[in-house]
Image (cartoon, rainbow, N blue to C red; front, side, top):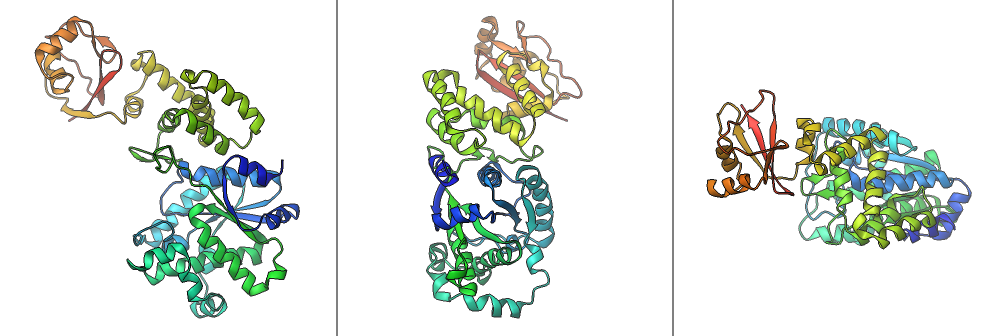
Length: 415
C-alpha cells in the first residue's frame, strides 16, 4: 500500500492539493514541512498527530522539517479564530520557541528551523516588492478564514499573516528544496497561498512536485477538540501535565473513538497488526484492551518507560486501596479532578467533626451510621471511633477520605 492510501485509510488526510505531485515528491526525496506555533510554552496532545505523521513521512523517504513560528507567532494566526489574538511580546515567544524546539528535537527526527531567521534582517520594502507584488488583495479576500473575519474586523497584522506563512513556504522551497507543506485542516488557506506564491514566481511548469496536504481535525464524539480535559490542554511537558493525567484521559475515551485514535496515532504498526488488537477489544469491551494499549503507548512515546511504570503504580495504588504507597504529590495528581476542601492543619479535629467539614455527609448522624457500617476510611485506615482525634503530620499536604467503594473526598492542608 502506498503512503497516501495508508494515511487515507487511517482517516488522517483531509485534503491534498495534488496527489500525483505528492507521489512524485516522495519518489524524488523532496522536503516536507509542518509548522508549530510557539504561542504556548509546550506542545500538547493535539500536536502529536503532525509530529507522528512527520516521523512517518521521514520513514517512507521524505526529507522532513519542523518550522517554529518565532516570527509568525509574534503576529498570530487568524485561521479558525473569531476574534483578534492577544499579541505576545518577543521575549515570551522566543522563550516558548526555545522550549518547543527541545520537544521537537526529541519527537520529530526532523531538521528544526525557526522562521524568525527568515525575517530578522529582512527589509520591509524588499518584502513588499518581492513577495507582496505576487499576491492580489482579491485573492486574500476569497480565503474563507479571512472573509469570516471581515465583518467583525481584522487587523492588518493578522490579515498579512497568510502572506507571511506563504513566504515561509517560498523560502523553504528556495533554500531547502521543500516541496510539500502539511498542517491541520484550518491551515488549508495558508498552505494554498504558499503554493500559489511559488507558482507565480517560478511558473506552473517549473513546480512539478509542489503541493500541500491537511490533516483531519481530531474531534471527540461530543464534537470537541481532542486533547483537552476539564482542567485544560494536556501538555507534553510533564511539569505542566503529569503523565498520569494523559493516561487517564486516553483510558476514558469511548470504545468506538479509541479505534479511530489508534489508527491515527500508531503509525509504527500496520493496520493488519492493529486489527488483531481491535478484534480483541471488540470481543471484550469491558476489558478496555484498546484504551489500555493506547494510553500505555502514548505515555511511553511522550515520556518514557519509567514514567509509564509510575503511572501503573499510581493506578494500582488507587484500585488496590493502597494509597499509602503514593507520595502526597502523586495523590494530588490522582485526585486532580476531584473537589477539594481546604482546612487549617493547626486546628484540632475529632474524626466526626473533620468528616463533616470535609462534606462527606450532611449530618453527624449519617456519619456515625457510615462509620458503624465500616464504610469510612481516612488515608487507607478504616475508621471505627467517631470521637477519635485526627492526627495530621506537619509535612502532610492532603488527606484522602473514602466513603464506600468509589466515593473519595480530598482535604488539602494549609497553614
